[in-house]
Picture 1 (cartoon, rainbow, N blue to C red):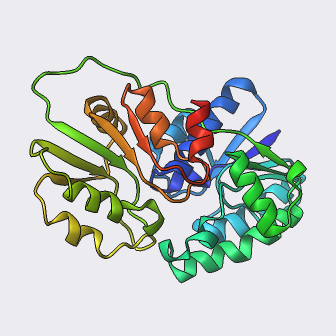
Picture 2 (tube, rainbow, N blue to C red):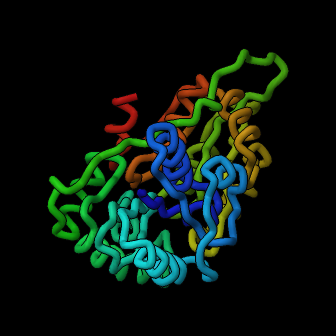
Length: 293
């Protein structure tokens, strides 16, 4: 049997969790020898039910991943583990790990000191022991190999996929004219510059800017709310359900993706799947991803 580290099911949905969910669902369709394991504090209940997740251990977060999970696996004879998210048990050798990018190195201001410390501690040890590493783009493969001295031929590039739920629909005449941006407003997402550019637009009084995503203590951009308050056309929608997000994609005049650094970047592909034109930065993995799409 192959065990799948499904700790991502305990986290709020961002690009990393979407990648993990789609990967797990694809693996489930391909194989019948998989066991999905996770802590008990599940947030993504529908996905957990679809994967028939087994709850093991009593800890949460990194403690579960570094202690409960490897102990459980050792009792099972140390089977192969596939860790789908950015981290995995550091000292478990029979493992295929996943690491999406080194954003915490290139743009440390986007993350708390504790977050950076955790990743800078876990990642090099994990890479030194994992059998193989998965990442989402050739750009990230080169970045990880260069910074950590990891052999590129041990990195498998598996691009993300978009759920079949993201589809176009016919336009409604009575809908507002708006641009859409979807992300956590971390510094490297470049939302300040996007908002400043929007505020400088002239002759588009009916054009709105819809921003989807919630800020958190990990991703802090203190000037964003102040800038947005300057114009009532800018609307923060917070976190949305998938159905609500799809509706936003389907109705937008264009999707804006100004990020300065991405290991992959799923939102532009979601927008395209919904028939929405994309305006994206020419940075990091973004040209690679959108050229392929």
